[in-house]
Length: 457
Ligand code: PFF
Image (tube, rainbow, N blue to C red; front, side, top):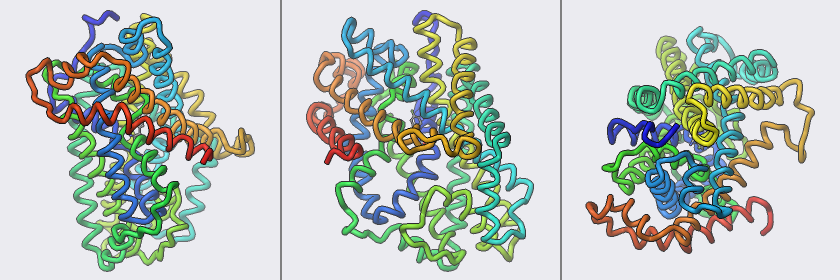
């Protein structure tokens, strides 16, 4: 496909909602509350917000400006900006990261679909706390069911991506993101008005500053990368569909704000409800099972005397999770599809099909690592855990660090200025601060995440 044939997002709000759709996902509703709960409540939130402001927004602006300037997929973008140099590997690493994350992420996305169906079928009704761990482990270890849901999720993602940027991704995001905000608000209001909610809010919001350690700061930075979809060129690819009027600074700020608010609101939904249901959470026992084992029980207990409300809340909750996951899987699929289509000169449908098949095979193996392949360990981890670990703790930070160095040190300053100011028509007085962060602060800080995660200090 040549560049003239490339589509653009039709409106500014469409561009913001598509990028926000990528950012808002399981990372916000699943991973964030777990991280907050286990890492010192509000103390973690403060460090996290610091990471978003200091690192997230400048790196997001970098991805946006590289993408919009080149109007190409992420690998093509570096090839165009730095021809004949090894920088093209940054883009390729991003595509590989997108592929890896999509493969295991769609397994959990499949769980959200299964739980939406269970909720719609009122399957949580009349079950006791002891039943839910069994329901969950029976489901994830059933090879066919979890593979089937992963495939179903991949096919839905595929269909939306094939429809294209404007009538697929943008249209879907414009419809789904407002729905997601409404569901979030309804659920948060239900949750914080429950008796005993204050205990949950205290758990979430009371800062425990003794928890601020090197590891906690590293986790907050890693979470910020994952949650903002940074480091793999996903937002670079989306920005290649921005039009010339899109204000890059304002868009990065809006997307980061939306993403952070959704994450914090998820905490407002989960913790008050969990405490109301009588779970005396110890910070150490909040794990990934929170959403699939604890929450189904919570709905029944919290709204036990109002079964209709319990039913409605559980359906809405899992539907919310599924939507959030879908807008993110679309964005990862798009990174890889744009690459295959443009670099191998394939039409969009064919490229998307190649990506869907390849991701389904790898995703299937990840899904089976909860069942028949449970014993297959690489570096002591199942394939699913290995992918999660390598992608979010190594590939994304490396990608983010290289993007910051590329924009801060290599890229022509005129390109940076022209993109951020829309060729001089915007003032963007913050530009020197952003460049300073990209040159010095971000590379050093991210090197710390990386070496910290790898246990090198
Ligand atoms: N930001 C998504 C989430 O919070 O769930 C995950 C994600 C999407 C990561 C797209 C990376 C990406 F490129």
